[in-house]
Image (cartoon, rainbow, N blue to C red; front, side, top):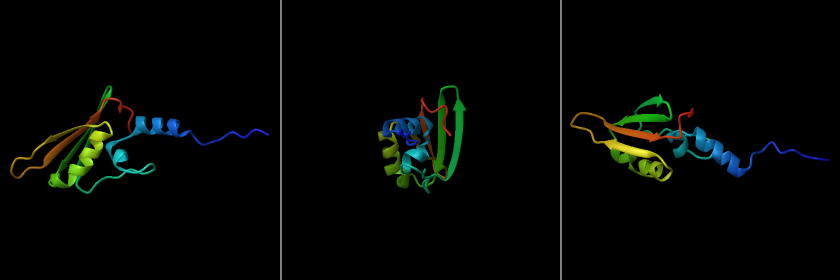
Length: 101
C-alpha cells in the first residue's frame, strides 16, 4: 500500500510562504499575520517586480522592535521622521514580493 502525503515538506512550505509574505506575515507566526497597533494608516503600491507597503504612525517608538525584526527577515525598511504635527512614514519593500497577497 502506498501513501501520498498531502503535507508539504518544511522547505517547500517555507519557500511558498516567503514568496507570498507581506510585512504583516513576517511579524506574525507560521500560520497567521499580525498587524501591529502602531501601523495606523496602511497602503500598498505594486509595480512590476516590487511591492511597497507604506505605513504612517504617530507612535514610531512602538514600531522600533518590529522594524528591526522586519529588517532581519529581509525587508528594506526606510523611516521618514515626522515633522511637528505630522505622521512618521515607514516604507517597507522587498523586490521579490510582486505576487504578495
